Image (cartoon, rainbow, N blue to C red; front, side):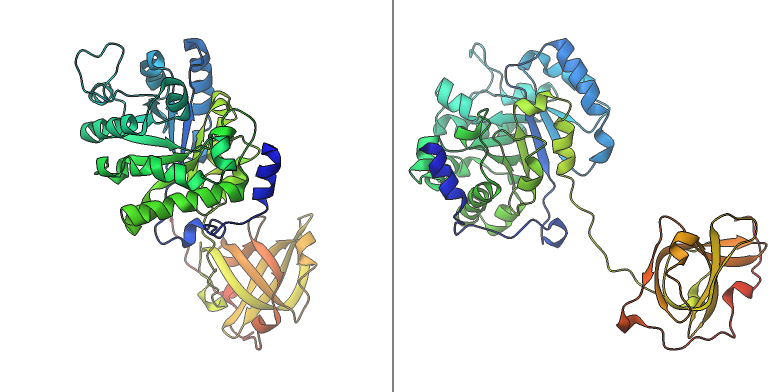
Length: 401
């Protein structure tokens, strides 16, 4: 019955729905964030092996995604050493609601800061449901961290029966309302929405369900604090996140990353992190004229008409040369014969990302495997060609540069 209710809900788009994520079009882009909660797992040796694996794959997301791993307290120091030369950061799984003093077993926010730890989890569902942490306790913990300058991953989320009763937004609002007055610096807060019924169960909120909840949380923050804070705060999804389902989730507009449990204990955790790397913004290439082709130029983009058919270069098995031009002149182009078949006399070609080579002071345009070559659209046809100005026939002075 519970699964049927979730499936039915997945087919209904709620009022909080937003369009697909387009990071490069967002007015205030939010840097993706991925947290790894190791819970009460692992030994020093297993931590060493995991860190060795994770640090070997950081090049793909360095400076593009913030990553914080939260091992068990006794391992914090050694894990910090394992990852000190990488972009990975280490956080705590819990923090005291009090300062220093006669509080046996507690670790204060100030002590975390003194220990070089700048992140901690607060309000995880396991702390709430198994250890009785109330909204008031989580609020005091956040206050302690704000005072000490420790950043917080603040966890919220509903139980299955609350989801089925349609109380998801009500529960999340209650948990958020408890902490607004304690937060002075929102740059040190990340929200993690973790539907409790999806944590460690293998069940995952559909991308639309997760997006609806995230959009609702962002709206709550906008109304309670400000639109500026709402648009800048990062909201993570947590609940049986894996390399297989993370791409669909991160594509949603209000999902800014993940808080990962069991999957953060595997080398494939890196795959989840790299899935969060924002796409490179697509830029419309600028196209120039043949007369603008100069020695050593790279990334040359032209619309040019073929005026001399491709011919095989003597001494080469598959290299061809042809001549293209526009109203400013003509230039010789080198291209492999499999692509030269497109280049018929009278056809206008779209040449993109070509580069110039110099041979004894004369230049040729080269279309290699990194360049694009295809027929131009009708509106890009070159009407006339100035064949009197041959750029490739001009002798350029050779320099050491």
